[in-house]
Image 1: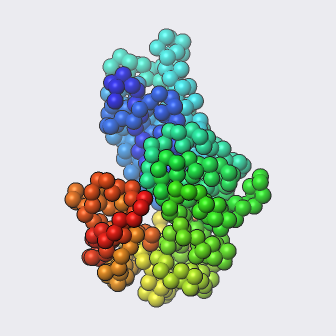
Image 2: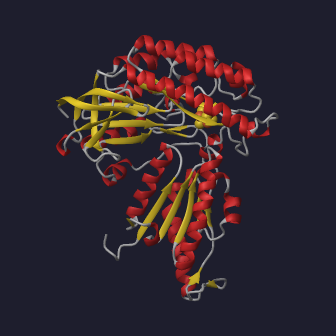
Length: 472
Ligand code: SF4
């Protein structure tokens, strides 16, 4: 990087949607003439893209802000911005706890980041010229202008506008890419902050999505993951008329160059027979579904406002297995929802034992201020939640390992992605069923599909060897 080139640094917490937003922010920064800094201390602009879904990532943000306060005292010209979900719902707390932050930008307003940066720079330049009367002097003698730019207005319902050609032009070519197809959520589960931080459900126009994916395919992308808070609810309220998620999968399948299509996370209530039929018929759609259940108890599901019963969820799984016997199913499970009894907890444990998910993302309920569940009586004590979680993790891990072991000896198609992070002699890829495989390969095999024999099973995946390389 040229030493003269101003630079930025982005911290990202949370889901893939946030990672995607960070990529979008990076595009804005590139457009403004900034380059990515290799170290935060070199950056003129530092942005924290935050997550509110649980308490832990929020604590990490405040702790990171504490570190940045030190850096800013050495470099008063640094611009620090907090964006994402915390910025949307915690503007007042951020202002109080970190008054040195220069801008707070909510999830619906990322496009205003360049304008906010320019405003801060103008204010500071005027300050240097003595045109502002309320500036303060830093220890180093430099001016520190602490006017806060705030654009954390509630995300608006309406059309999603993305500059597709720009996104495609500026993104570095990648084998795998995430493509957001909808934003926000209308489900209002009682434990979840997302509808409050990301606003109501809005779908991107189908042609924008297809154009973006065609561009990615031309640039070498072979696998795409469609993103949305409830990704299979896609297509309502579109100006061009309703387009079902199943239909969208069909249209994407027709794009040459794209070899694999994934999506996350679907919502059980919107998992239609039409979608299952399309998945089974379209070979590019991967044999993996991550279908959050949360708990396997009808009374809890009702109080969570999830909109399905255990039986209805089971019915979807049965249909998926019948249509695609080789499909892998993973899920989200939340323990310790307010009022969860031992018996209800046991219902979830029994369901996990019976259903045998390939893997699960398991976590303890944490209170999210502003949600209905935060006000519910009978909050489960922390220690009880942790004990329940530990027992579930132990059970699920043993199931995952058993399932992985049952695949040893099979040959799976894997997209060779690059060197393994843990062992420089191995390369890494994923199966269609979203299982990691590490295997010896060479640099020129990156980007190609290979048939890999699964020799050794672990909790997190497999060690294998290439049996046959298939054309890219
Ligand atoms: S479906 Fe429920 S858990 Fe998922 S984002 Fe929407 S409100 Fe949150």
